[in-house]
Amino acid sequence: MAGKNVLHLAQELLETFGGIAGLLQTGADDLKRIKGLGGPAKRAELLAVLELARRAMSQQLSERSAFESPGAVKDFLKLHLANRPHEVFAVIFLNCKNQMIAMEEMFRGTLTQTSVYPREVVLRALHHNAAAVVLAHNHPSGSVQPSRADEALTKTLKSALALVDVRVLDHVIVAPGQALSMAEEGLVT
Image 1 (cartoon, helix red, strand yellow):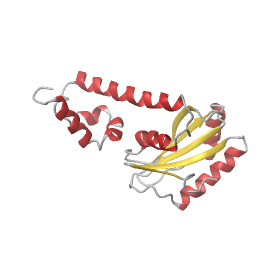
Image 2: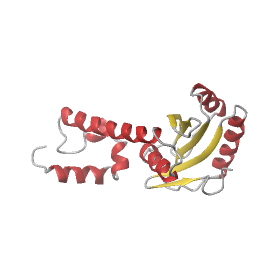
Image 3: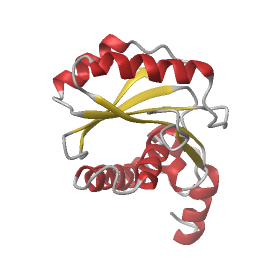
Image 4: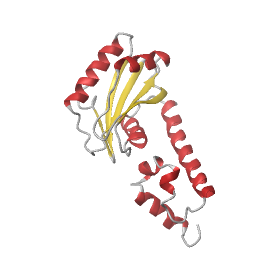
C-alpha cells in the first residue's frame, strides 16, 4: 500500500463501492481497480475480511429471532442484495422460533425482472424443514415500491407455502440504501 495512508485507502474503498454495503458485495476483480491494492495478497486479505463480516452478520441473525427487529432483517438483506446489478430473489428460511436456518439466493434475473418458480421455493422450504420464510428481492432501479407483479407473487407463494404449513412472514424489497417491508405496509397479511 505504498504511497497511500490506510485511512485514505479505506475512504476510497467506501466511496468507490457506495459504502459498507457495496464493499461487502465486492469481488476480487472489482478490487483490482483500486490503486494501493495492487498485489493479489492484499486483495485476498481484504476479501477474507469482507467474507468474515458477511458471515458474522449471518450468524448474528441466525442466533436471535429474525423479528426481534424488522430493521435488522432489512439491514441484513440490504447488505446481501441491494447493490447487485441484476434482480435476485432470495428466501430466508426460519425455524419455529423465527431464527434463520439459511438464506438462499434462489433466482437471478435481468436488470428489471426475474422469474420465480413457486415449486422450487416450496421444495427448498421442505428441504430446510422451515416453519416460516421471509421472501426478498432487490430492485437495481433504486425504487423499493412493490409492483403489482411483486404483490401477486407474494400471494402466490403464500398460498403455495401454506399447503405445506410454511408461513410467509414478509417480503422485503431492497435497493441501495433502502428497504421496504411489505408486511409493514400491510401487503403481507
